[in-house]
Length: 180
Image 1: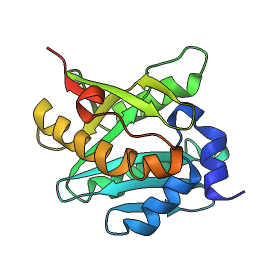
Image 2: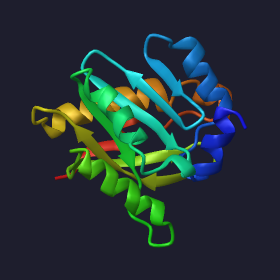
Image 3: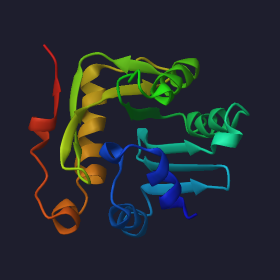
């Protein structure tokens, strides 16, 4: 099973990108978008001057609980940049959602309570509200985190959207904002 099939088999369709988009990001943005892969894990992430965005982090079911996820997050922490990720709210029908949150909290991540983010699920043509989590040794303002998310939305999530999915991305201001 290739890396895309493993991701696609684990993540809900609402959170997935098309294989074509992921391959385009890897090919066209090699200075920013990266894939770290083994038989036991896949991590897709974008790295910028001030932050790292974790797009997908998958650990094989038979390797969970063995510290692989912790090691991968530590590799990112060693870059000494803010780490950003998006998480779905806890779904009682899917115990993995709660396990993921517990893992990120154990790793020192915090939830940005003030950022409203309507993720454009391009494959399923739906929208879902996602929480923004971040890790940094220094406290970050909501404005800083929002600016990082704007970059992520415009450069990663919307990349080649019209070409691949057949419709224009929503305006950034319709997707991301600070709550009052």
